[in-house]
Length: 148
Image (cartoon, rainbow, N blue to C red; front, side, top):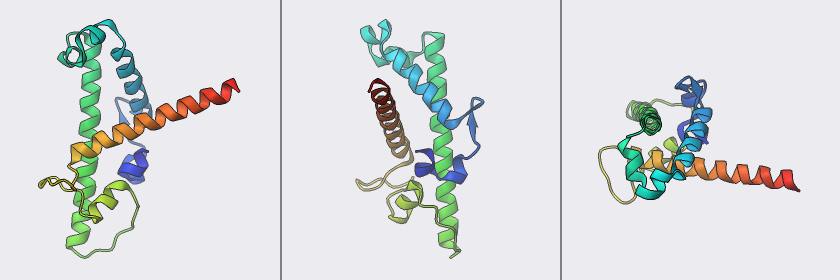
């Protein structure tokens, strides 16, 4: 999923908090899921978790910010690379990642926002949705295969 969204060369070998990106995201996703079912979240909602009153909530919030910053920088660098290649008329190796596809379709711009244009944070949120959905369906498929 990371390679499809951000391009293989941009994520290969990269680490966050000492973990490869997929492991980092899986652990973060598990921790967020655990938080959602704890009593404070049930009683007070997500706003309580965002306040970071508990150490574990602050840690999860920090890791969420870390990933968003990492992904934002990836997108920004990739768009700059595509801008440079386009304005200078350079040929470049097409990778087929989503950033490149949105860029070429003129649907990825940081400065202007219309209904058919993604900003960087929207793209990061879309990635998170696909990542969680893909992980959930993979997990359910594996469990179904084990019980058959």
